[in-house]
Length: 449
Image (cartoon, rainbow, N blue to C red; front, side, top):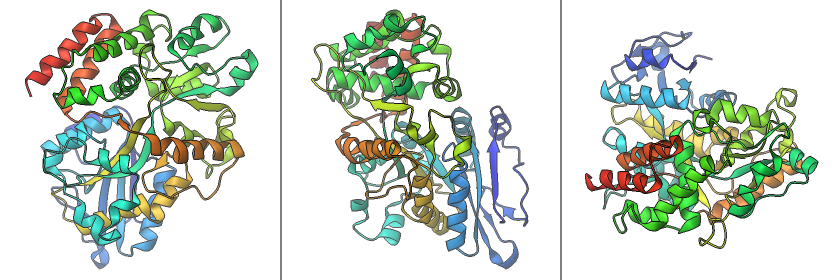
């Protein structure tokens, strides 16, 4: 293979931020232009560059193989790194006009932040899939691909790769051992930690160090309290100091002050810290999302998978509990997990279009779905094999029953609002801001837009 495939370790992004050249070598030299696109080489072959935080190996390697097998003369140079490092890398490359051909994007605020540097993908989609291409996708995934677009802008600056549902995971082995049940209400959730304290596991394991999980949980809370109100605040229809949104900050605070989450939760990263503890059997409940199914990758050597994750035998998914005075049932929050975009500066736009459409709904996309990396964005896609009935049942519950019910986004439209909410949540968790002050701080940012 002539591709280059590099994983950038944490901290190595400092070099990327200064844009020092130096990814792993390739078997065939290629000239790299100022955009990071590569062309030339023997036989006029084209190299499409890709940088993102997801997907990762082994899925990514298989996706590259599948694409290259069907596209003679095109190779893929892929670089992946951890999320926080990638955000820095992407910002640096946008600033210095050295974006890769294809980039990974989060819907909403992040896509809008870089919209001026991204190629509208409507024509790409029509060329590959036809005029009715939108019918291929789950509606919530497409809605979120355009989340935050200016009024009248119907362009897609990123296409959805996978879908996601935010939820909580239970360790079913501990549940059976302790006779525990799924908490359906906030009162039942509050009772979890005192009931199981001192049992040798963390009852409710929260990795609150990174903003993306915190804002997702806030949106779960806000929609369980008053469905849809938080998005009305984004649109200026209600203030951020609306009682329902203040209450959502209050319930976020309760996770820390009422002893639901473990001490030090705001210093624990969701990846790799919290998920590592959960997979090792050290926790009863873990708030995360449907992407947890990837731990049971059917295509992997099953001997390399943790016992709890093998065939998903040790887990049960459930939705965030209802809140007193709020919605009668838990609300579904989720949508597109991530998008693929193409740099407007790319000199390989046609090949980049071929790459992302293959990785979404072609041979490469099937490779990705086969690994259970998350739920599909495209209707009708399913892994070609499961390793257990439980794995299949969990997948179909989430993909066939839950995903069509998702109404509410786990993303914000506006980058400054996303940052303001994330900062407010961190301050509330640290005890340096009250819920009312948190809501006021977001409103102050909104007033500057």
